[in-house]
Image 1 (cartoon, rainbow, N blue to C red):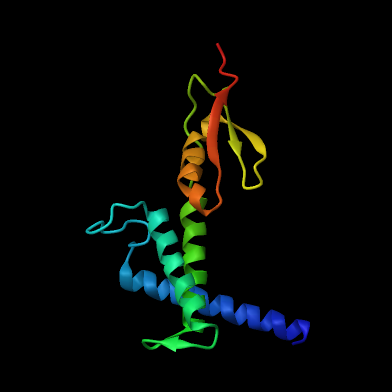
Image 2 (spheres, one colour; image 1 turned 90 degrees about the horizontal axis):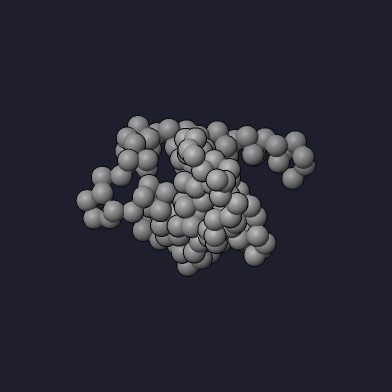
Length: 149
């Protein structure tokens, strides 16, 4: 493909994905951000990660050219991309915790490379969410350091 063809294909796929997500949002409502929680008590983010895992399993089992139960592997790839966009949308709304007396305190976290990184305690909610994601290569709070007096 030429660079122009790649650009056009990217635009076409992104437009199709946007239309798919908007149609599914209309059909399912806000089930991604506010799940019914009839059978599962998982957070919305965790539920999306499970759905993404299921799609990855389907793609692995079908190969990129396969089809099962009326769904092609290509459909599964598109659904996976949609879940990734939903994950980005849900996590983009994350805000740092409100100011508190411990604003100068910091967490030391280990990133996916095992490096220690110091982050403000004011971001503890994000760090705790990251801890939940540890099984997918996230980070985990290690200790609180430098608590002001």
